[in-house]
Image (cartoon, rainbow, N blue to C red; front, side, top):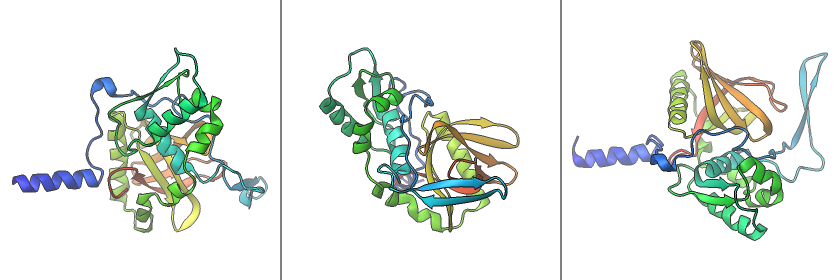
Length: 262
């Protein structure tokens, strides 16, 4: 390939999110740890969900008053990865003052969410994001952007186009490859044009069998336990486990916060 062609190919690979996210060994944060590397609080849903045991039908109604911290699944998944890649928690010093923490949090959230950070912001007084966010919930909620960051996520255009079996199969392979590099991918799961689920989660581990791949995800709506996104190898399709807001079942999926287009 000519030099100009190689340069163009490299540019396209970066813009489409195909370039490997790698760091020198001494800067790699290691495997994503659940629950240590997640927020202690959850994104609150604007709907209350119920299940009629007699009919097995799901119902919902709008929460009144509306939760003050809601519609931030994308914001929280993105921020969890920014803290994972761009922060280092040091529990040995005593906790510092709120203004210092505000400055450090802003510095972490200004980092590029689409690739590993070349430096780590040191956050003193706590061993991990879980304990830090439990102690400073109000500070972190104020720092996390409003719903606009999820609404205007640049990859939202993808949901209106078809999802082929080949696309879903390739995505499963990409997710495994990212995890092998200690880079937890962020995935948009949806059933568009249905609105039963339209959600962003962070994939942090995978369990493989001959029949399926069980991707373990951090679901910002549920900080209590991982939620499983399953890839069926025979059907080349994904399904999402039941949650309080989704009855479970088939979904489409694609990676976001990955390259210029997503």
